[in-house]
Picture 1: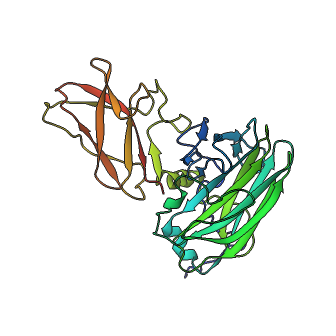
Picture 2: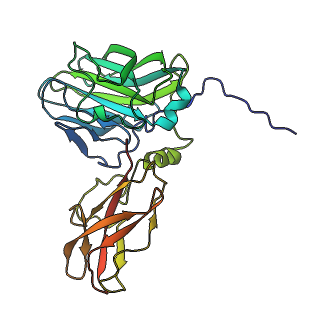
Length: 336
């Protein structure tokens, strides 16, 4: 009997990876803070500095009370009024199929106490594919009331609203993706009152007009992690912050059986093939970066990565004698 494909009505792909903020590989349960440059906190989500001053912006993982969510992305609190943004840049390979189509960006948000203004937007990047460099050091906003965009950005849709204290509110907006779009960017900017927190969950970008019921990008939570690891992977356990000292679990250990002329070790495969050839960073058990531990004399020694491609990497060492026991952690980043 021939198979017949049946489309499930009401179910749509989520083009935002880690939209339920389940994975925080870089920080674990720790805090992400930025002052002048962007940084990733939850996997695939960038945190940007304040749009009004250089007060540090910060996010942290929080246990969610929203039905269907384990964690929220928690902004704040601060002792001063603050405006800053989170954003996800959708990779070109996932953006191109949406050119010329209607899409909807949605998310849930609540405030810890008082109502707070939020601004959310769907942007199109028409510059080089996967090269959204204008995002490097600031949000695309000049300030809360005077809105402007840098070159190669087009606003597809923008919305404003008020997050309510103690209650999750779902916000959404829809628009048509320009046919020359290379990357879509989903942005949430908030105008936070002093000593107040915001909790975001269930962010979704789906095809079509109108927000669909939330679903993660992967077919399972394991698939969702694999999608995250295509951009960033580490040897530390999921809930251990990168660079934490004294962490043995997941550490890589080698013994140099040859002499000093040998400067590489057989490649080791990444758990997931990366988006591009990644940047590999090494960490000693001491927590220092750029080094691994020489267990023979308990000192940190410089090492560098020799990446074979998107699938594996090797280690370059500088004149290690035979018999040296060497070990440490590593991260591989192929982020946008």
